[in-house]
Amino acid sequence: MTEETKSRSRWSAALVSVFGGPFGGFLWIGSGKLAVISLVLTIVVGIALCWIGFPVLSGKDLSGPANLSSVGLAILSVALVVPFAHRFKPDKWYGHGLSVLALVFMTSYPVAFAIRSFLFQSFSMPSNSMVPTLVDGDYFFASKFAYGYCRYSVPFGLLPVDGRVFGVAPQRGDIVVFRLPSEPSTDYVKRVIGLPGDKIQMIGGLLHINDVPVRLEEIGPYSSDDTGPAKQQRETLPNGVSYFIVSLTDGSVGDDTMAWTVPEGHYFMLGDNRDNSSDSRFRVGMVPFENLVGKAVRLFWNSKGKDYSSRQTLDGQGK
Image (cartoon, rainbow, N blue to C red; front, side, top):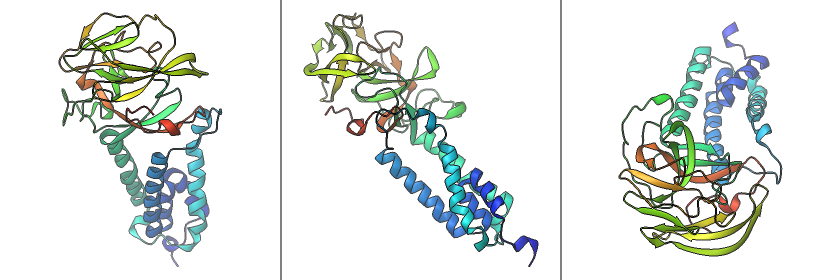
């Protein structure tokens, strides 16, 4: 038996598995079948977990331990691959170093890049400006194809286009991720309230669109560790989209404003936490269509241990 046809050592199988995952590990030991099965299972389990959502521990801040998740995945990869190391021989073309490296690269980085750029991207909520819809610690997916693509869709400026490609206008009430016009490197999350040509004004804490007050129902008190006591209300837009908002105090600086007319190709954004949101009433201003990054569609975790099951689908319909 030649050196090339001997089974891989457990140490080398473990090392490759740490950096290449179970797919790379199984390729390295010479099992193409197990490599493909592990790749398919990884994709299916990953999609299922993201759809169902990751569990939380009530009241426990897991943002620190979450940063160590890659270590746990590496240990799991080693545990899956190493027991099979002596059962196979790397006598196929895909079992050699360069082949393993190339296959791992082609099935991970380009695919992840394409998904992030053109399908879905994950974001986290670092503030309480969208309470009660989104709270501090929430992680959610945004659809990158909902509004078409712009120069902010693809990392590193690899899509240098003006305007949008396959552009689709957002609907009133959508929760969107966008780049701050005055600071394009910063992502913001707000709700689309005003469409091009709309007249928007806040009067006595009540939103007016084209001089017509929107429907606002009192729901009851709202309180959390992040906001303190507040009033919870249900706001219903002219197109029927309804959702909860909170008001921390009456007569705040954003409750009575001037009237704005939304320019063509721009949108007026508001946070659902009306008294604690930097939005189009203040420094954000009107947001150009080309600054929209994606539409928030689904929550999948909260790092601060806050339950999100009742808020998981971000469809703009308050429940």
